[in-house]
Length: 190
Image 1 (cartoon, rainbow, N blue to C red):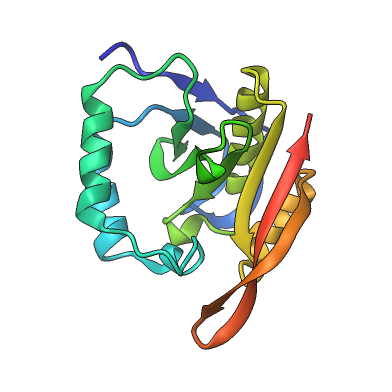
Image 2 (image 1 turned 180 degrees about the horizontal axis):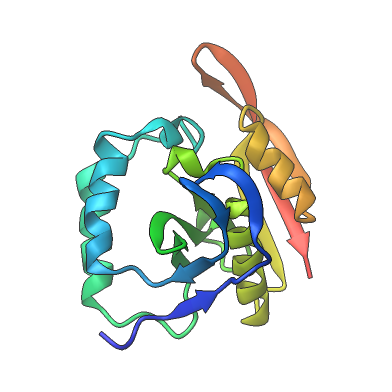
């Protein structure tokens, strides 16, 4: 495998208490997956699973299949234009950003973010990572991006709106924990 890709997001220091266990977070980095990330994924998929409540909870993820897919990614050369990065916060692996084509449609690239490290929620780290991922993808020829979530994921809805995404479809419903929510599709054009 060639040298890992690293996208440095060195922003102004984020002031706040408890962000990833640090008083001031100074560095957020998007990078390729590394072999030492596998234990984090095992922990996130088996022990620290709160994040799964917010990431399309109607979909069931087979953790062993997912770990297998990550292992296969480690075994091959990364593509010239990445569609997935790991998120590091001051050297701590906290999650990932990824993209996929909605229903296989190559004109509808959707982006997503997962930060399973619960102590990293609410400090603006996801916003920074997603902003950089958007710039990266748009700089590599994707002029229109999408994201999908559900109306109960208020943090993601706010983040999408603040990043310039607009709801283009809310016609489907999903039942989660006995309540009905809308499945939301957002779009952002360059």
